[in-house]
Image (cartoon, rainbow, N blue to C red; front, side, top):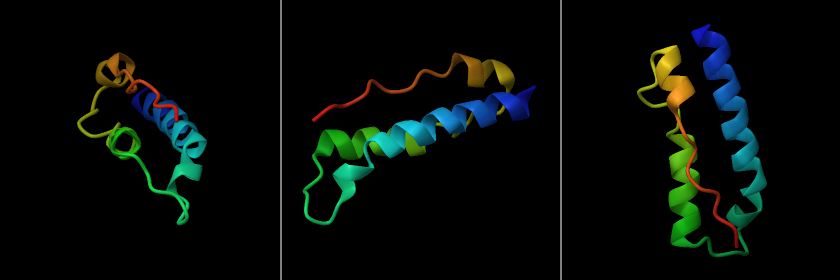
Length: 65
């Protein structure tokens, strides 16, 4: 159950990161809010070692430019 839950969380996290990948282009300056948001997404799985923790995790609010 844990493996499936963490896999689903990572898939959602990866999709959210993909939506903001354009902000990391070399010809753009990423805002501090976007930097913080993307780091929070990358850190999403830190400390989630039980199904209950995975299911309780809430992604940070999406930042839109």
